[in-house]
Amino acid sequence: MSGLLSVRNLSLTFATDEGPVTAIDDVSVELAPGEVLGLVGESGSGKSVLAKSLMRLNAGNARYGAESRMILQADGQEIDILALKGAKQLRQVRGDKISMIFQEPMASFAPAITIGKQMVEQLMLHRGLTGAEAKMLSVEMLDRVGISEAAKRFDQYAFELSGGMRQRAMIAMALSTKPKLLIADEPTTALDVTIQAQVIDLMKEIVGEFGMGIIFITHDLGVIAQTADRVAVMYLGRIVEEGPVRDVIRRPAHPYTQGLINALPKLGDLDAPLTPVPGDIPSPLERPAGCVFHSRCPLAEPRCRVEVPLTRAMRPGHRAACHLNEGVKA
Image 1: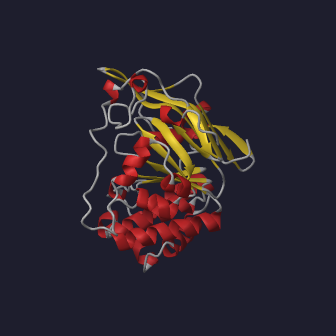
Image 2: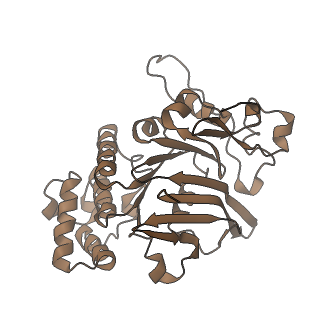
Image 3: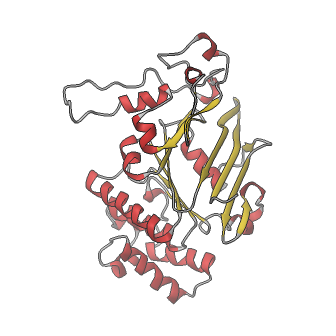
């Protein structure tokens, strides 16, 4: 393996009182150092579950498939994420080699502990710094993400900061350990458009400076178009399309991707009606047979209800799983 991250045949089920629920179904994806992979799909498509799997943060009732593999290349080491056991081994990935920015910082920062104390604690744990060294680095990172009066903010609590400032503080905290992989789980959803643009620009700078890989999770294809190098479209736990972001957006090869693009507001035609994807995403407990999207697909054929489509190469680096693409040569 020459890349940063290799996920192969990842399947994940949760044991529930109503029976096993498939959250991730045979997902394979690659990420190179310095690359931004956009992960897009509706709520309930499995994006956050996939992200948490990379840090082994899913609940204790989670069961991975026998063929599932997640390999991380970091500092000359090949880390088998699913083979890690115990808190000491898991710290190799959690907050060290892999950091995560969550959608809502208030749910991630401890409300009764200052921002600075939380940053210092992780640096002492993962980087072995002294308290003074950790404080100096933390203040520096807060300043670098554009937080004014960083030394003052260091001693404040999360509830004392604005939404945009909290998000920047979380980015500073995630970056301070200099991870190899950064997972950003809808980091701009709760922000206004001006702060959203600043956060996107900041993340682009981060990739160039630190050379880390980023998995950027969102339901907004517009954000993905401005941020990612490649995009993977998820639906009900499966990746239905993946490829270079511009190629996927300009020439979508799966009806679900086409539906997501058609649902975007058209600024050039303000009178055009919004065109949502018809229907609702099914419950994982009522997972459709065959193609998981067939119950909402306007182009579905009878075989879509019973046959799982193969993932085919559409063009170099661009693949999709749809029966309609049979016969297409890359």
